[in-house]
Length: 442
Image 1 (tube, rainbow, N blue to C red):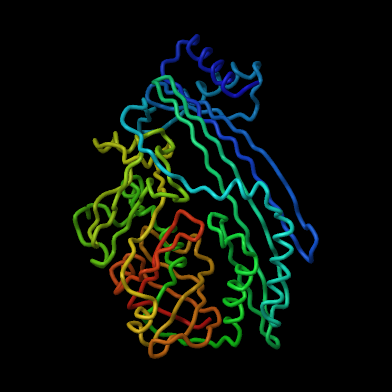
Image 2 (spheres, rainbow, N blue to C red; image 1 turned 30 degrees about the horizontal axis):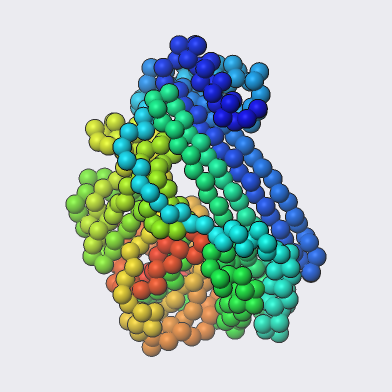
C-alpha cells in the first residue's frame, strides 16, 4: 500500500477510536555500499529500509508502536498496540506533540553532486583509487579497503494537531584505508571524500593525501610521561565535541549527569571559546528546518566568549522547566544537536605550533567513545600524533595515553586556529592549543 494512503488509514481508524492526539513518523532509507579489494569487487549491496512509528498521547503519556508492514490489515494492530503501550507507560514527565505553529526557516542542506554521481563509474573509481594508493609510495604494503557509499533518507511527520512535514537527506562518499611498512614497523591510516566538490572525483588526489599522512607515521618514537601543551588537530577536536555535547542537555543537567547546572551566565571555558549549534548552516551535514518533534529549529551559541548561555530542550523538558523548546527535541527526554562546532579562530596552523613550542600535535584518538565522563569530566584515552620541538613538527609518536578533565580542557584553551573543518560530518572544529594535558607513554 502507498505510504501516504497507509497513514491516512491510520488516522481514520485513530479518529474512529475517539483518539485526540496521535502522530506518525515515517523514514525510508536507501543505502548502497561498494568495496573493492585487489581490483575485484569485494562487496556490493543495495538495501532499502522503511519504518513507521505510530504514537498516541493518552493522559500525558505517549505510547508508540513501530512497524515495517504497511498493509491495510495492519492498521488496527498498529494503533491498538500504541494505545496499549501508552496505558502502561510509567514516567513522571509529561510528553507532548507539536502543532506545527511558528515559522520554519528556509535551509540549504548538504547535497553531493547527484547528477554527476548518477553517471559516475564507482567501481572504476575504487579500482583507480586502490592502484594509485600503491603507486603513491613504495612503502604502502596493503590497501586494506576502498569503499563507495551512498544513502537517500526520506522522512514524513504528521499528526492530528496539524503538523505535516517532509524531509530528504542525501549522502555519498568514498574512503580508502591502507597500511605502510618500514622494516618490521607497520602503520595504518584512512581518509575519505564526500563528493560535493569537483576535486572529490579525483582518485589520485585522495590517494596521495592519505599516503602522505600514512608514511609520515613511519619511524615513530616513544614519548615520555609529563604534563604538556597540546595542539588537537581540527577533526580530532571535532570528535571530542561530539562526545561532550550531552553536557548541554537539559535532561543531563536535570539528572546530575552534567556539571553545568546553575552555571548559566558564568565563565565555563576560555574567553576564546564559542560553541555553536547551527541547524541553519548552509550545506551543513545536519542542516534542518525542524527537530525530531517537528519543532522549528534555532541557531544557538551555547557558549559565547567562554560564557554559558543556556541548555538544549525538547518539548517535555521545556514544559517541566517552564520554558520553550530550543528545537533540539528527540521525542523523548534527551536532546540532539545539528551542526555542532567550535567557532573558527584567527591563528594559522604555523602560529599555533610556534605558540605550542615544545609539546605534542595530536591527529588521532583511539577509544574515544565512552572515555569522557560528563559527570566528573575525567577522561583517559589512547592518542597518536607528532612530537613538536621549537614550534616544528618532528617524529611521529607511537600510541600514548592522554588524560585530564574535559571541563578543565575547555578553560585551558589558549589559542584557536583558523582552519574550521567539518570533514564530511555535522561536527566541526578548528585546531586548538590546550596548555595542560597529561601525556603518558604506553
